[in-house]
Length: 426
Ligand SMILES: *[C@@H]1O[C@H](CO)[C@@H](O)[C@H](O)[C@H]1NC(C)=O
Ligand SMILES: *[C@@H]1O[C@H](CO)[C@@H](O)[C@H](O)[C@H]1NC(C)=O
Ligand SMILES: *[C@@H]1O[C@H](CO)[C@@H](O)[C@H](O)[C@H]1NC(C)=O
Ligand SMILES: *[C@@H]1O[C@H](CO)[C@@H](O)[C@H](O)[C@H]1NC(C)=O
Ligand SMILES: *[C@@H]1O[C@H](CO)[C@@H](O)[C@H](O)[C@H]1NC(C)=O
Ligand SMILES: *[C@@H]1O[C@H](CO)[C@@H](O)[C@H](O)[C@H]1NC(C)=O
Image (spheres, rainbow, N blue to C red):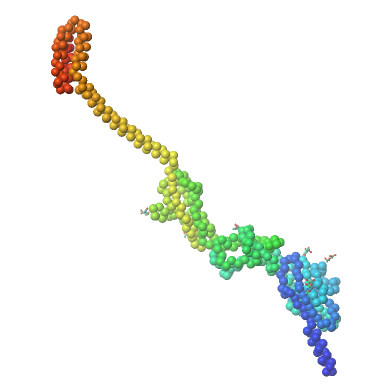
């Protein structure tokens, strides 16, 4: 009796130590329609002969801990394989290798899988504990955004995590790709994209997928980073120089999220800043020199505001008008100069001619006068009647002393002589 009990004890301990199954990995996530490998090894007491090896999956209503045997995924008797798994499994079928490959995985394959060995004796059966948990990723990918603050807008400086995931689970074996506004982000290869401090430049639409290109996200997600207006600047239409009388439009441009709600326009003139408008555009219908000055705008949204850079506006007088004015002025000045010169010349000439009239009488010697007198004398000599006057004239010629008299009186002398002559004629 003692020996029997020792023998039984030995048999039991040997048997208990030998039954084992190990799975690897314990949990798997695969894409729909792909294949999955359940790596598995097992052991059993060497004094046992195996009758059955099988993989089973507890049904949805059953306990999922392996205590209830569900449908056969694989069975050493093929006829016992459940219809759902026929032709979809490949069993290693080697000594102590229970690895199984399941092909064309679908959502209905989600669940627990257990390996079980049964020996010929009624109680000699063993289910590997724990099993393998299979989850199936259902495409397409979805991008989800997480921040430390739930249900709040994302602001600049926040830490943001973008995750590329699918329904149920996300396989991480394959490299991922990320796109921002349809452009590849080269450094992002994981299914998680972390931005430790988000800026307005991260604002945009994101999508993701597998590098292999076999699957990408169906929808883009907008990373809605809220920020105060940035890069506010003035755009001039038309650009270039503005001429007097032309119209001009200044547009206040800038990035902001949410969009700019208030624009304000200012003009700086002689160190005075004055408010001039509150629309996005500021228009000048007909520019004049009073519009000369510096301009800037302010864009504002809920997050804050920013001033644009200052632009200078210089209204030009059209060059044709300016030329006309210049020509007119030049012509006027020229005419004035000519008039002045002419006036000068006339004045000088007046002085000169009066001198000239005087000078010949001054210098003419008395002899010339006597010559004229002689001619007259000859003409009159033709008529005998004038002979008498002749004589008297000859007498008049006599005083040569006139040359010694004051010069101015010489002409008066002549006139005196002629009058005398006429008297004689009568
Ligand atoms: C399994 O595959 C074999 C050949 O590969 C085919 O003849 C058989 O019809 C398939 N059975 C099922 C249930 O798909
Ligand atoms: C078990 O079988 C599978 C499939 O045949 C094989 O890939 C694997 O290397 C085997 N494992 C061991 C431990 O031999
Ligand atoms: C994979 O399974 C689906 C149903 O889940 C079936 O429609 C499809 O034809 C299968 N593909 C292959 C290659 O067997
Ligand atoms: C993002 O997508 C939305 C709608 O799909 C579109 O209106 C918006 O312009 C996109 N943003 C950028 C930065 O491409
Ligand atoms: C911005 O504009 C809105 C209406 O356009 C106005 O009610 C509001 O007072 C303005 N805010 C500022 C700060 O000017
Ligand atoms: C600035 O504006 C004020 C009020 O409009 C005016 O009294 C002052 O003369 C201006 N100063 C200059 C330098 O234009």
